[in-house]
Length: 116
View: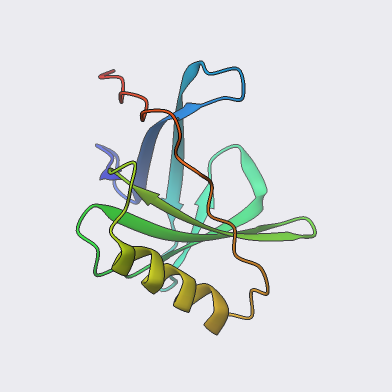
């Protein structure tokens, strides 16, 4: 995640491996709201994103809420985040009343982040 050249915007870039094995670049633009910790996702007016503090140096923790759903996400630059990062994330989700925790297996190497 990085600050945009435009004030009050953050940009998150990732490359996500799809079920078919292909790596697909993605980019999200978030708008900061003065006086609030909520982020608004560009192009998704129904979605609210909250960014949480993480002591893990290469990770971010998010909660997304929208029309009838809530999900917590841990993004990390490492394909195998340190166990303490996963534990911190799991503790956060449970403290916010999340009842399920899913950790996807990493059987294939991580996708390279494109440099655009």
